[in-house]
Length: 292
Picture (cartoon, rainbow, N blue to C red):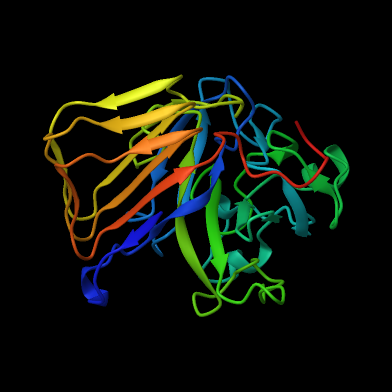
């Protein structure tokens, strides 16, 4: 069930939540700091994050992995121009970015940028057309291209036309806003299931929900405009009758459960909010017969 109440475009959330469920795109156990999120990144809709506590980047310390199963559609990793050491007013650093684009089974695409030279095609041994699993090593975190220090640039895009591959610029690997929407990635491996600038998180595998079994929502709360609230459970999510749960216009919400969702009297999604109740497994969206 998907509720997108009302037709006033100005009241809608700027970004919808991803339909896919992702893992954090670093190797298990990596400590990560999120610098920019979908609102604080310039331009908006993207994420910047970096490994912490394990020495310098660009030296095999921080392994970038696929956030979900999919097919690699674009690899550029032949560049070695370090953005923080280059005058980007003289050289257009973004044209010399290293990146990987992956298309996922549900039609969403993810991008991974600034990785070390040759770490995708040589070290990881990957090629365009390869099918990868959630957690497959893609390359090492670095600062290639227009990067102010070592980090991973990550984004989720949803092409408007799924019948043909979206146009992606070779230089920099950009997918224009007129061909694909940005989406806020839903993660099943951290407690609140989304990330914000300032978060410290630890990457882990994506085998199941953070909350196991039944999730009973018995306390009133209001999700304000531009706010996000995500609940996930392996079995049941239920709101308690008479409990005031409200999603104001401009807010995002998702309840995802393995078997049943009960929205009792007292639940309210206002006009201009985005709310989805989804019956699905909590692992990432898979292609047939490939990954566990």
